[in-house]
Image (tube, rainbow, N blue to C red):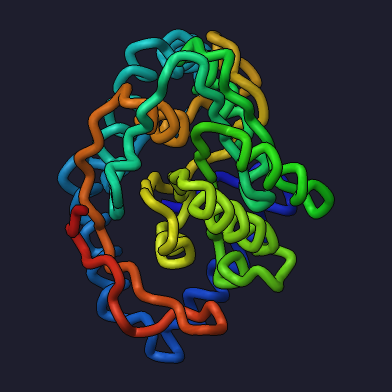
Length: 285
């Protein structure tokens, strides 16, 4: 499944993802047979549910009225939430850092990397769902790294949300990955202070290999843009619950039972993907 494209920036990132996949196949880092296997599995499921059969795509007013009535309804949202929760995958949990053990009055920081700044609405949505006014939601930018570190050291709990859409996102020396350096500093500083950190992967799961020093690593997959909390009607906004589900699960609101669908490789000293497995497929902490 490909991510939704909202603007030219998303399209450019999608093309970079294609280019990366093609290069990794040519370099022998991804087995072409593995890609064929995945495509075959998807097509088999589509065939099972009749999605490959010829369909009538004509648009009528009746079809429009039916779509407006049902798409995004509460039943659909509940089903989407249930699917999102079942997919959440905890690959590391040292010191039982997950879920958070909050005391009354504890401050929590939810910090989004620059690479997932467009998803900050998930933080606000989770804050609203939890009814917790002691949660601060921030986005790391090229200018506020020191502020992020200061707030992170002060908070009782910290959740770092990262997004990988290409190999450059793993490297702190690139424009796509500079937030990872700030996250490194936060993890190191909090450990010096005797505190823990949870990292949430919000797109491709390979940032699990990037933040191995984090106390807990939680994966959700292919989150979409949510800059603000969507209205109940869903008008003018897309409702995608997976990242919100991941955040509230950090507070113990949802049980996490998902298993890895792929192997997560280690990274070398240049933040390049290697052929060595760090977290094995279907492995749980």
